Length: 212
Image (tube, rainbow, N blue to C red; front, side, top):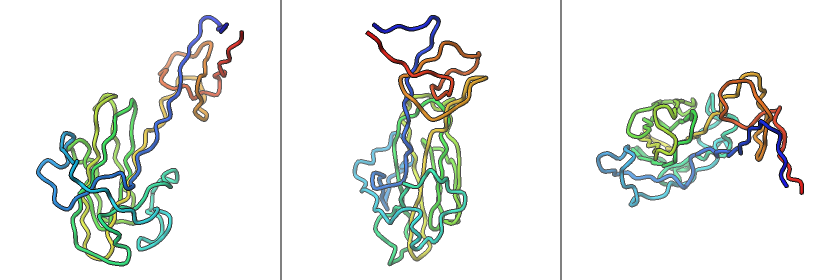
């Protein structure tokens, strides 16, 4: 039998993985109108081409300034491997995801410049591949469960071209009087101070055991 104290609170933490630039992103050189919108059909677009990890040097030298250390899995991507070549192309990228409750932070950079859209609205742009540019996406604007798309227009001015992106959900707001720790699953707490109860990642929570 499972014995629980009363009152009790129970929840299960789901860790939302980051969305990072890789070959799952779609790309094209010739998009139709509305390419940055969420309802656009990109099924005919090609897979992006991997040009290496962000921290491996290559044509782009050191890591972009301000790039989050947690985003080590992000890959430089383009429409072909341009590291030993060059072009003056404008390339369009898309990546869809489902919105979760909270705030996402989008980090982007590109060689040479870019415009990044979220569901058709310009979120951030930049023109220095040595710098990480950021914007936020909030579930108060896009409710949880909404189909989302990050769409990036990248312009190369010669030499290798590439895009680097990382989109991740910030940790949930911690209830007043509770200290956040690493995410856990199947945890419970007998009581908490009134606050925002939308996270299970608390040091004061106890692991839930079954006894029979």
